Length: 134
Image 1 (cartoon, one colour):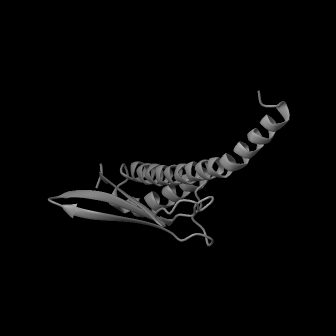
Image 2 (cartoon, rainbow, N blue to C red):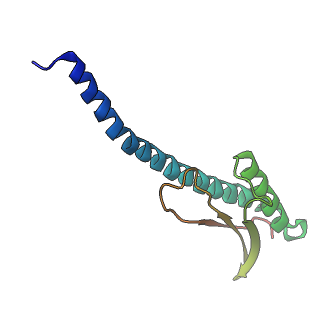
Image 3 (cartoon, rainbow, N blue to C red):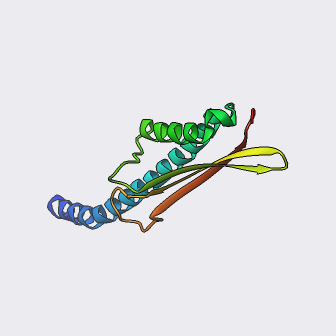
């Protein structure tokens, strides 16, 4: 039978060997989770910005309404678009067969929490809807 004192040493050695692997795994999960949260926030902001602007007529400037509301939603979700991070929000209106489509494009630099996993450095999304009252 192995004495109790040597079993404690084995447990400490196993812990010391597995802890760095466990921490790397947790850090990688955190980085990927942060990427998913940021991308989801961009999609939600684009969707909300367009939905807020589509009931407006062309004379009410739906482009600036969509851009301003998308920027507001991003701020509320904790994804900042300011001087510290490169972030572009652009809306446009295209006509096709008498129908007017409002499109918003959002692009933002991605900053990982830990940087343990190499991921995309630029996140972008686009959302389009038909204007209701052109």
